[in-house]
Length: 198
Length: 330
Image (cartoon, rainbow over the protein chains, first blue to last red):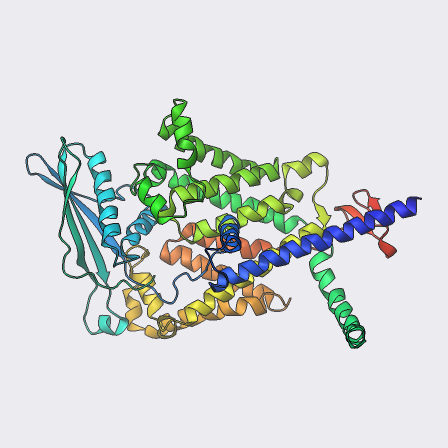
């Protein structure tokens, strides 16, 4: 009787192991697919959406192409706060942040050139950042959002005397009208350079 | 008839594979590596929380640096965020700032509980959920460290990470537990890390910058990453090239050389050195820490059971099992 009970427990344990292994292997298959960034299922179907959601929930859908295939450039944001008397105070959105905080704000700015063709998104982002500066500086009547990109020569270029410098990439002026919603006049500076993936 | 013959031929082969795979995945293992991982990861995430704390309203608020409507547009609307329960709480008179502060504090408290290994599974669940909510709420600010924190916290819900070096074990009077679940957990983590480094290395190798060394030059010189004046590297480009090739070798070789006992210490050293380098020279401190911790804990801490560890059960011949009290092996 005791032997039969322990045999039963053994069978349960074996089934549990098979189940756990099956779940583990299935998860690892999704991890491998996520890592390779392959598109193996239609994302509009019910199964596809479920797999995508599981990938987001568990992190199995993540890619790991950091600094791949190379390192692109960097965007820097600066803001001119213009008060009612015409006084201009330069400001930075990451003022006072720790290095970790500055990294995260830098990631925010990087969304500006994720899709250089989407001008509406770019204006919305600039407006969002201008809104933050208005909130920080209630005396401001205008905020000029200025984005610059860092041109870094190659090692060969550096040896020949070229030096890194910031190049204007985008500029927009936002005016605070207390009686109505904020009005934007945007003035792109030249044509936006294609931003390599970083 | 032919199918039966084929099965008869294949069966011994399948049984041999099964016999070699089973111990690899299912032999009882100590939870010590998982306990170390739990402690170190929660410590790193607590450190990250301290760094991010001054910016929580700017990063996660409706009127943060990037406003909530934009964040919702850019991210998946089905992912959980603070905005899901904010209307309800604001309706009860709880202002947004308190909701954000409460979410972050709850996350920190759960991390502390995870660190000490008290109510580990519950703490792991809430750490994962709250971290996911914060990740989605600050979607545009995320980077690699958030990806790995999310993955590891998900695993912590299912793995016996409280089975060693925890208040729970201390209260039970056992140093750590041994189970097949710990072995499976460890293998999943190890294989996942192999996928991470192999995929990362291959993607890097597809870019010319990684072969001519420019990637190292650019990473060291970009203001967002630059910690020191490294412009001298332009005069000795071979240094950048060697660093880039070394990174490729470490990452692509990880999946192959981290397993054998003879090469494992070297590859752990190379990997940790790579991430320490990233932390020191690129200022990616939290990222470098969490990646170092993953390899150190998962491959550097022995999972082989010690005689004094408690065993949940020992499986004898024919599937009979006996409950073994801590400290003895049947």
